[in-house]
Length: 148
Image (cartoon, rainbow, N blue to C red):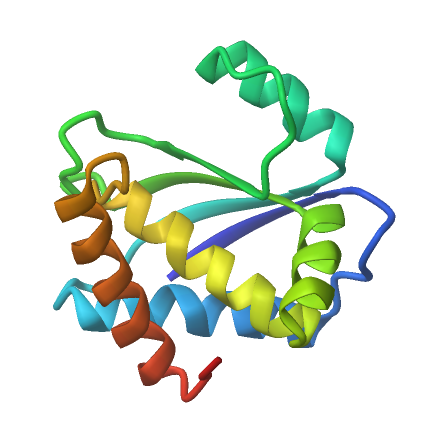
């Protein structure tokens, strides 16, 4: 697995421990999905303003969000082993972790799992799709032994 990191924020220090957690989170999703671990993913850590701009420019939604996923292949096939890009809003990580009463690390892990599932073609726009995606998230978080 090859992960390319880009840290463009000042909210959370991106340590080796956090990078290891991100890698384990990606690996858990791939294991749950019975996929080869030989993939490439870019993970960027950004602030609230930057993710709002990206959300507006690429999705037409002019508001901040916690995470964005940009799959490399529109057909969600891993032929070229490049899954795509994950953009994590570290300000939202801290806010959501506090709201939900858990650690920043748990929130980072969950958002990584959520985003990788998006890169693999899962979505949560329709109720049935949302149910399936949530089930996959639970399986991956269980694989990581991270529970709510």
